[in-house]
Amino acid sequence: MKASTDATERTNPSLRRFITGSRALLKPSAFCLLILFLLAGCLRREPPADLIIVNGNEPESLDPAIVTGVSEMRITRSLFEGLVRLDPKKAEPIPGLAERWEISPDGTSYTFWLRPNAAWSTGEPITAQDVFYSWRRTLDPATAADYAGQLFYIRNAEPFFNRKLKDPALLGIHTVSEHELKVELEHPVAFFLDLCALPAMAVVPRQSIEKFGDHWLAQRPLPCSGPYELDAWRLNDKVRLKKNVHYWDSVNTQTELVDFLPIGSANTALNLYETREADVVWDKELIPVELLDVLTNRPDFHTFAYLGTYFYRFNVTRKPLDDPRVRKAFALATDKRRIVRKLTLGGEKPASHYVPDGVAHYHSPEGLSFDPPAARELLAQAGFPGGKGFPRLEYAFYSAAGGGGRMQSKIAVELQQMWRDELGIEIGLRQIERKIFFNSQSRLDYDLSASSWIGDYNDANTFLDMFLSESGNNRTGWRNARYDRLVSEANRQTDLAYRANLFQQAETLLINEEIPIVPLYFYAGFSYFNPLKIVGIYQNILDEHPLQYIKKISGHNSVVSSK
Image: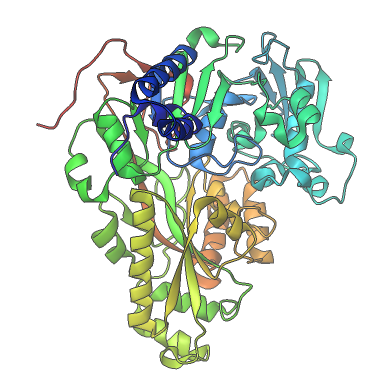
């Protein structure tokens, strides 16, 4: 699909419909005058952005408490900051709204001091009470935050979330003063500061949420705590951010006006970039698969090690997927090397385990290999010799306009063929619109489902804790008390070797014994931008690039091309 250069299409879909209707009613000369008048008005009202980023799909929300997608989180991190933010080079936690903190000798108590000049984009001061409200809101079951479990390390947070404890005063979050907050944990947590940088723990405006309820994001001006504020969010057009002049570090925010374009088509994204209508394109899914081998040789196309795993889930509440032998048969009949060799072609590695290589202080146990004879034997033991009598199930994956959607479809077809050839069973394919797809996953409205997970911080826990029984990100229906105990015990440890051993036992349950998921491959990070024109982007293992550090060099028109 070729990207449109028509100004009416890029600026306002409603305007486009109005012009189409007017064409039949006016004489050609009058119609032309109308067009010039409307376009002139559009140009007067909206200045061009200083930086244009192609960011993948349309955001499901910009509420940091409920977003789960990478494309949404990129925007919410710019709008709403937490006590801690991420360093642009290594993606490690550094001071954010809190200028400093102290940790108790036993590692169970953190005291944060907020910056005296921390303020909302509307000018009012940000206080410790705002932090308490924001964290309590994430823990409120009514908020439906999938990441609420990341706050369970705080004393009494889990029973509060489960409604076993109703008094928020009993939470281990205490406002000592307007600028001092004390946090008590259930046990030492080596990565607690990393958690404080997550969107789910960002500071949101109580004054707007309590006044406007579910419509708080639609209000203007919207009080924001991050380096940018929301200027406009037009569905299927753009999310526009403007510099927050009241941000405590606004003097170092590099760009005044930024547009995020919700482009799902790889061809459209590449066309916008090549015609200089976009400056940065995130994600490999926005590269045309048929051009991948050529484009990856260009110096403005960047690959890097990345903490991400592509896998598929089972809904273990549905028969016969409630039988671990059936799930293991699927896993043993899945040729992961074939998928990488034949389809992905972008530096991905076959995944014999779930937690990616390179995670700090951890090495995964080996998982299941491709073994069709063993798969057929297990399926026969489960009562389906040669696939006879196996019910017709469906493999669900989300639809998208471009490379990402086509890749999901290709992987689905390849898996379908493998299972037909090796197990003698027929699995249908079910393509679902992206927003509906994730909602269906959460409601366990699927049989098998394409999935992926991107690490939120550099620790094995960010992958393994999502399959805890009470995790909102589990989405398999699988519950295992031993797994829960192992992960919980690992998170209490300060001995890194012992901690890693506990995690390895848990991952063995996940990928070798119970198998609610089957890892397929590890991601290779990918983005494209001209390094002679864009500065402030540093490749790191979390693929986190704080927006306030990114800048387009004014007037630089150099074109990077391959030799």
